[in-house]
Image (cartoon, rainbow, N blue to C red; front, side, top):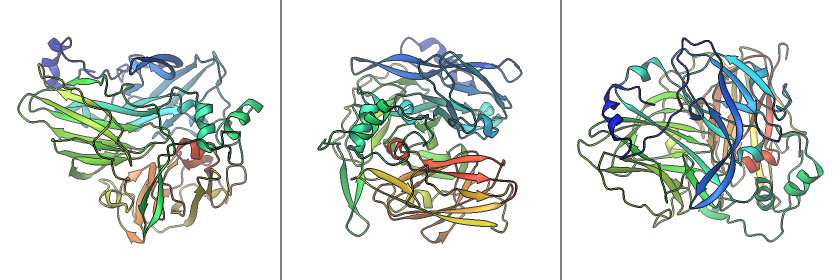
Length: 495
């Protein structure tokens, strides 16, 4: 995408350095819907071909909308299985939210469905709400640019992160669950399971080494990290053996839009020798926070601004797997700079992400929710174990859950209390919330749609209940979701 005033010089050097290919949507004045297709595609991952899913828009994987442009999309399912897409970070009418049978069914192979709603600006994404399909990379960026983005003299770069296995998603899930699938198979935001689905998801291989590791924390208790060793970690569908190289200008300003679309991997974003400013999370502005390393849980997004040195060179932007040595990323490079190979394994393991919520505690919203009394509050206990592999909300899996209820317009506070030894990125559909309390300390934290709750921690969020409908509330760790870690936020006209 080449729309910014300082980027003109790049036009003549496309052969020397590849640039990120952000798909370009139709102009805001157009009334024609955009075509989006769920389809298979083939990636080259470390020299090996891999067939995965994807979401192809007019200019490549994903969509970019201009300021004021409505989300008018015709989605066609070109897969040979049913699917449905959730517009993560957007607030469509509930019927367009993209959860199986809540209320719309899966799109059958060959079916097209139309969507039309007001788009919310920011860095967002879209993905299947069938966990095994999201694990097969059925996801893509959804960028909605603001007027300020268009006016700013800066280059925009998207980094879309995945974890990847050459094995089928059903086999991966069976290995992770270790033969101990949670209750409610077929009712956790997925279509009803077939007998083969149950075999894949509920009868894993006992004794399988799942690559899990523990970190000591919380007064000596073991924190569980990384319950699966993936074959590769991808940034824009590529590994560090052949990374994306983005042409940049000496002394230029870059806005990095970072999206963690991984199934089960938390990343640290490391900008190396260049200082960055964190300016937005989950598509919402925060007071600028300087640094060169920021954590990013599954489902979350970060926007970083970087002012590059007024000199030639390369600046790798790396995503480090928490608690491990694996890493991926892309490279910012001026024209003619020597591109050096970066090993996919770091010398040292990256630390666990935000066990004391230090990063979250430092975030302050640019635009806070209006102050008003709380009408309704609810504590949600997050629990679960690695053996048996079952993850719960209030001790229940999906299907035996107790819904959170509210009336439209009520101010609601939800306290997430994590009593398990794994972190949980909790995502609420159809709403934006603000972090207002961390471990008993009140604050005017970030506006979000996905908040990370580390082990043995408490985070409270505030929101104003929206459309009267059933909205999903779940962990965005896909194996946790697939084994039942989901409930619903029911907004009803009379509660």
